[in-house]
Image 1 (cartoon, helix red, strand yellow):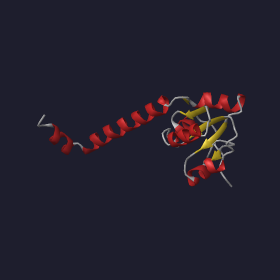
Image 2 (image 1 turned 135 degrees about the vertical axis):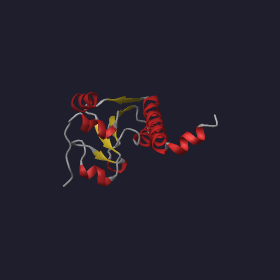
Image 3 (image 1 turned 180 degrees about the horizontal axis):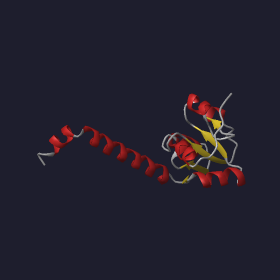
Length: 133
């Protein structure tokens, strides 16, 4: 046990990587653990948009949204028509959506999904983005 502090001191990059991995795993588990919310891969989100008229709500920063977003996505709750029944919440890497999901749940929305892996997963799946003019 006395070697642990030495290991930590001598390997800060490894320790930092370990902490980052643990944080990302916990965040992904939290998205999937929210009652009434499904974390979906990009191909399932496409089906929701095309066949179930789900509305995409992008909760990233305005600058990130303008650089590229899913076609037809609304930005932030202030831009959203909250009368929409089915929402897909999009963020950068899949964890920023948690607060928005909680907010929508308190407003009575029950048909909520999150894009698993966020916009990063969308672009890795080679799906299109549009940019704000």
